[in-house]
Amino acid sequence: MGKDTLNHGRTTRNNSNEAVTKPREIIIEQRGNNEKFVSEPRTNSEKATNEPRAKQEKNSNEQLVARIRAGIDTADNMLALYDQNHGFIHKMALKYSGYAEIEDLKQEAYIGLCAAVDHYDEDKGVAFISYAGFWIKQTMQRYIDNCGGVVRLPVHAREWIAKYKKMLREYRQYYGCEPSERELCHLLGVDREKLHTIQENARIGQIKSLSEVVGGEEEDFTIEDTIASDEVLEEDCIKRLDTAAMKKELWIAVDKLPKEQSEVIRKRYQQSMTMKDTGEALGIAAGAVQNLESKAMRTLRMPRRCRKFKPYFEQYLSAHSFHHVGVENFQRTWMSEVEREALREMEWEKEHERIMREADQVLAENARIKEMLGYG
Image (tube, rainbow, N blue to C red; front, side, top):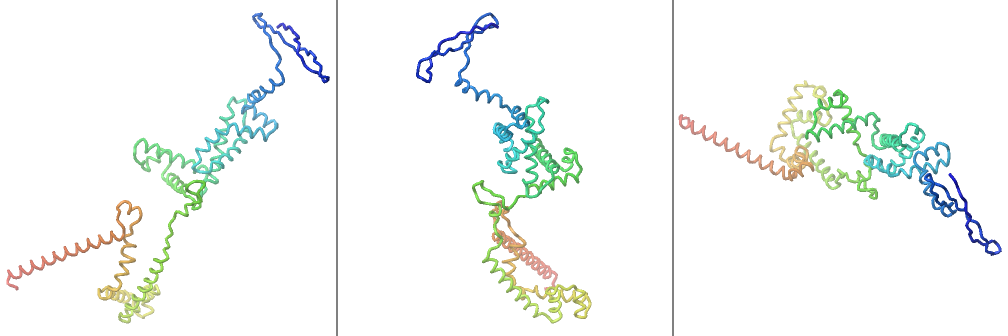
């Protein structure tokens, strides 16, 4: 290709402030179709303007990896590689944000990125970011397995849990119901024992730390703070005093029993002795101990003796222990323990009245029959 060079005058000033004409080189090049065009070398300012663009075009992921592996500005190029793939890393971290902090996951992603640089082979024809995705995902999952839960589970156990939950979700979406154990075993390809192990590990994986912060990162509010204390000082104090008073009255009632019955009750319930040991201590047979205990219990249950214990039963035993109404039941039925016990008492009274009416009717019928037969 032919070139013609022309010198055009350019006016400059030398050190003595005199006007000097400096030649400017213009190159005339010939195209393939014998047409000539003028090309002019770029000035220093024009080269500086286009340098960042050329540099940006050269700094692809693959080129940065090559520089890092060659030992050229390793730290700077590694940081540049992380920065220009930050969006991809952030999206991957969001997928696991329910198991660990995003910033911690990003730090683990940097470690995965370093591993990807060490193992990347450009000759395979795979884009670096596609290859690095595997290493980044693996390091995030390893971090979650080691640090993301209160109870550490092996990697293979978490993989089975993920398969199990995915199968449950897909089955519910398709059939609208829960799968049976037999169906789960068939779908997962495991036996019942293995399925039970997976289900137990899934429950363990849901355990939360009481120190876990809830309500946002800026809130100093943990799960432990949401748990209500089972200690109410005033009620506990009153309950202890009432319990002590009830025990005192109960043992006073026991002491009013015949001597042998009183001794049997005390040895059986104060000293926690067996019937055999009680019999040996009193010099009687175990069968006699059982008879004395039964007589003592029947005596203590007599209305005139147990009337004083009824308030304790209604306050601490009847409603609270045998008929406890939890929060879930209250939200479903809108009925408290007191209301439920009041209704139960009303139902019992109605049932008692019905039985008494039937008894009166039976007595009246018997009297009428006796009168007809002449027994009256």
